[in-house]
Length: 551
View (tube, rainbow, N blue to C red):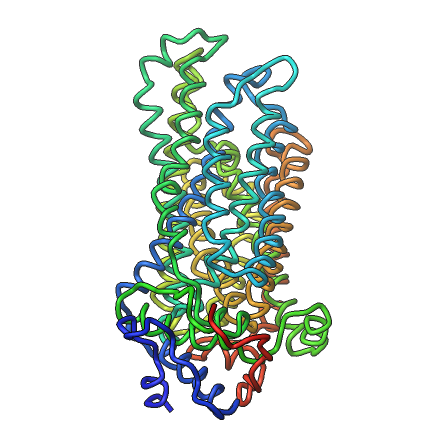
């Protein structure tokens, strides 16, 4: 079979510069074998420069996403000093700038997930990054006026940025998955997603650098205007578009995945040529004059979508991936976007009460930045790479089960033991350690696996759409958590409800254990095997062509 496939491959140096056509009388069986042989070559390929390039190009997007999302964690404190009444944003203002991005992300995940299955991964890849770049830069230059407040402008631009970030989830997941070899697919997807950790870390480092650079300026600022702090948050947010600009060209020039070309465009000839090219040279070539011979394969339609998901084995998988992501993001975003609140609630890094005026402003910004850095380094970043090391060894499902179980115990301990764990300075150190441990098990657990599994577990024609649905469910959880956190955190007094929120998070982590039982293990299996569709005879016959002549 493989030999037949190799002989049929197109050569860029062909004398007539055309793709080879199937011999007259070749039947659908041969086409089907050719497709499966090409996919087998992708699935068994050794790690190459092209695989590394895919990881880097997709990973830069997640670096940018995480930087832009979590930089607001620190920037909101800066915005409060400049534009908030009494040096602090109101609860509605804080909620608005933090929840706008998840709302936009939810819409972007659904929209781009669907479009990537309809018009192609390549055609959409890069558009979402353009949206992120423009919206991020626009935030940095937003102004305050009588008709439109700067908070309102930031909410709008952060929503638009969220749409672009949402598009990055299904596109990067599916592109990485469909280009990966079976034995390294989990690690490639984990490596892409782990760039979230580097993005969060970079946001904290930039915040520290900017705060330190403006030290003297802050101390000499007009205490009413805080002009230096106004410049600081703009630099912090604006730098988020730099890695996106660097990566944009590479996203726009990445080839279409062979699975999309075969199964959705139904162009086996082009797909087999692409496989040969990207595995050997890392490039691709499309001959505009070549004859296109399309095959007959299952097409994505609304009736076919309903038919596929009317089978319980397929529907329960979508429910499992969607709810697991929803439950996880309740805690991940509920806490991640409010690390500063948690740090202040436990008195960790709070400014000396003897400090007044601008000295207190500087010390608070410094402590918030350093505190976030500690939480990220101590838990978030190591968790991503622990998953990277073990995801293709242990499997996705065991890691997700372990993560949810550990988080249930940790959040229950933090919540029910909150008063004692924050009573003394020594106890606060214990609280901080357990909190960092919860960050670790979020990433060495469901935060990474909920991204990986939906990118593998569905057929090509619905893979991006299904990933978008799963990811959007997660962002719905993020919105619920952020609104709930904002409304409840001060119920009964400043930060008085934090312990009960942690208890609620523990309950959702417990439900995540049960939703994980609905998903399947994808480790070591091909995407076609996982799809729950019979691959024998998947390509049945050629689609009728109006003309076989090349004009």
